[in-house]
Amino acid sequence: MASHMCNSCTDIKLVSFNMHGFYQGLVVVQDLINTENPDIILLQEHWLTPDNLSKFEHHVSNYYSFGSSAMTTCVQSGMLRGRPYGGVITLVKKDLRAYTQTVHCDERYVIIRVANYLIVNVYFPCVGSNDRLFICDDIVMNISVWRDRFLDCKLVIAGDFNVDLEKSNDAIANCITAFAESCCLSRLDILFPDQSVSTYVNAALGHESRIDYMLSSCAGDVTSFAVVDPDIHFSDHLPLLAVINTRSTTPAFLVSKAKTSLYRTS
Image (cartoon, rainbow, N blue to C red; front, side, top):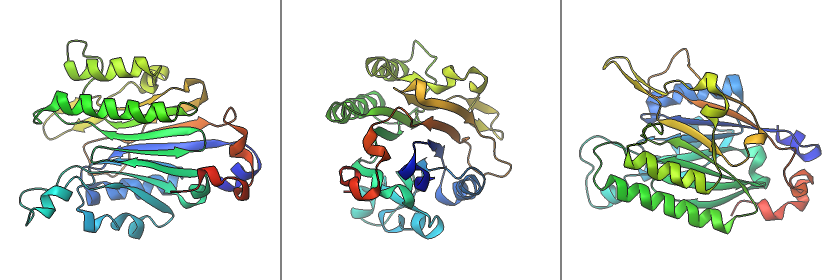
C-alpha cells in the first residue's frame, strides 16, 4: 500500500480492537492482517507489562508499535498481584514509517500523525472504575489540547469507549458526545447504519452492547466501515474496520519519501 502512496493517493485501512488480553486477541489481529492487510491497528487492553511490550514486534513483525502498559506504576511498586489489565498500543505498517509521527503516549490513549491525519487510540474507563468521570474528563481535555496543536490535521478517534453513546442520561456519554460535537466528529456507526450493531458480546453472561466506536472529522473521506465478526476469537469485543480515502489530503503526502521529513517518526 505505501508504495502506491508514493506515486498516487490511495486508502488507509484502519482497525480498532479491544484484545481482552494479548493472547486472547492475537489470533484475531493476525487473521485481520492476513485477510484485510490493515495499515494501522489500534489495540486496547493488551494487558502486557512494560517488559513484555516487545511481544507485538515479535508476533506482528511487519508493523512497528507505539504504546504503553497500564501496569507501569504497579510493577514499579513491587511484585504484580492480581489479574493484568489495560494498556493501549498502536501498530503502524513499516512501509508507512516515513509518513508517521509519534505524537503522544499515555496509559489510556495513544496519538500518532499519519500524513494529514491525527489518529487517536483510546480506552475509556469501564463502569465501576474509581473516579471514572474525572478520568474521562481528563482524557477528553488532553486529546483536545493535542488536537489544538494539530489543527491542520483531520482527526480520527477510535477505541473502547466503555459506554453506549446513545444514553443521553449518562454523564460519560454526554462528556464524550459534547467533545465529539465540539470537534465536528461524526460517528461511523451512524454514517453506516447497517453497522450499528453490538461491539461487545459476552455469550456466557448473555450481555451485549455497543461500546466500541470510530469517530472522524473527515466523514467524506470514509468509504467503508464494518464491525467484523471473526470466525475464531477469544475476546468479548468485535474489531472495527474502516477505510479512509486520502485523495483530499495534503500534497506533502504524495511526494517521495526523500521529501517527507516532516512526517518522519520522532
